[in-house]
Length: 149
Image 1 (cartoon, rainbow, N blue to C red):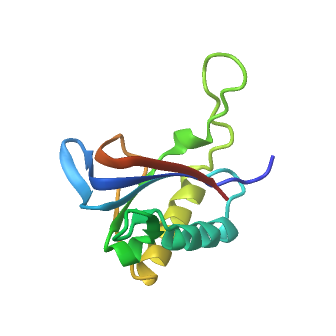
Image 2: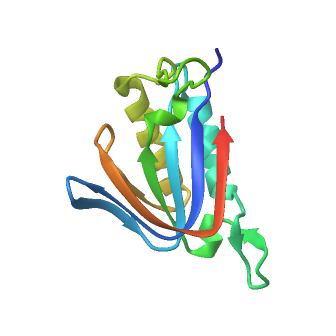
């Protein structure tokens, strides 16, 4: 089993994450990043994920082509932890989460991802790690990618 941080990235017109009915993060246009951290993930995965997210050109330019990254588009990132992305559904009917990194390992890596995105000049809002969250978004396109690191 190899470590594999998994991100689901959606281009959005707006997005908000709430915990217990209270908003904890909100963006206008940009991207929602749902992030799952697996056992064994580390700085290499965080570094690769941050670089890819900052450089991913999937926002439209003036000709309607996917040619702009999040910074050039003026967008923001809503980063939400989602351990269910690490699930194995190959056997049985109940997902297995054996590959999910424990919270003490996953939370610092997601915090480091946030820091790296901000250091690259991207505005980042976040969900609350470990909380039951509600994510409301308006997908633009729809444009959705699954990235594995």
